[in-house]
Length: 175
Image: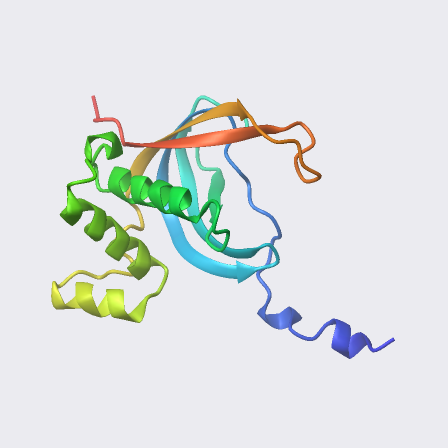
């Protein structure tokens, strides 16, 4: 057994393992990271959050959680792109439901910011020309994530068949 070969690449691996995913409830959060990652389960969009407030005991204030969607499955890619745009729009304080398909500028701006946050050189250059620091623009932004449980397909990875639907909303206005 070649131990050195088994451990090759370990120094560059992320520390920690899997994410802490949101459960049913309302979660007021701040964005801590956005990135794309080509990992064990394929290409994914990952958003990390610090929980500011939550109705779920599993997510107390100051805990962290993440949201992950696949980008390389042709069956779900378009839907997942829509959810990523909803996250970006909510982080900008815009209710995603208010954006109509004909509002091309809003769709393009959300797409540009998501691409920049994930490190697209072309998107970063485009934002830099507008004096916007694209790779950090969404970090620290606040939004609300509403999570509901929905029945889905039973799989080996999810034997209960229950999935969590995430709906993104602008952060509530301070009282």
